[in-house]
Image (cartoon, rainbow, N blue to C red):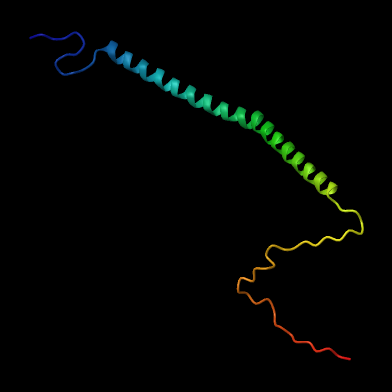
Length: 109
């Protein structure tokens, strides 16, 4: 009857193999903990330092656009006395809604 060095007839591991498996398990566990910590501190870094910079840059960009629009509207002001007529785009559309009653007026002399 031949018995292997690693496994006896019942399929049990010897002490060396059991220790080796425990060490591999611990290494994989520590590696997983390291990856979780790396992701946590990465997100913390992004939210603390990089995200405020991006928001600040976006706010300045938006503020600049608003100032440009304000300057353009000030430049397009017309001189006093000039008459302009602006039409409402929705004025021609009634959409089937009655907005009030029609009252027929008679001219009084």
